[in-house]
Length: 77
Figure 1 (tube, one colour):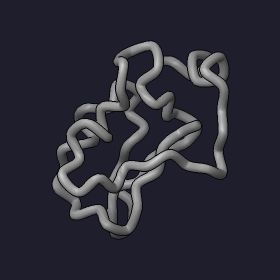
Figure 2 (cartoon, one colour):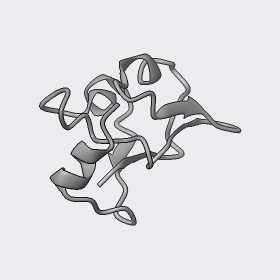
Figure 3 (cartoon, rainbow, N blue to C red):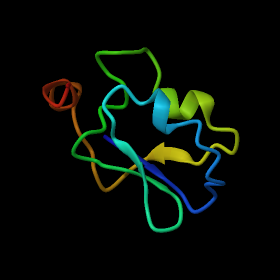
């Protein structure tokens, strides 16, 4: 499943540069994740990099977007 960023985001700017798929962008008020691009870093890293660097733990699995590892790998850049 792809990830999402919750309203707890403090716009610290550390997650976007870490995303190997350029899935993170600045939304109207907080950073957001493009689910069509997010692979949870499958194929790049063992753990999602946004989760690793987020100081407020606001990068969470998007339960509305469940994907298999095969589907995530198909989205790799």
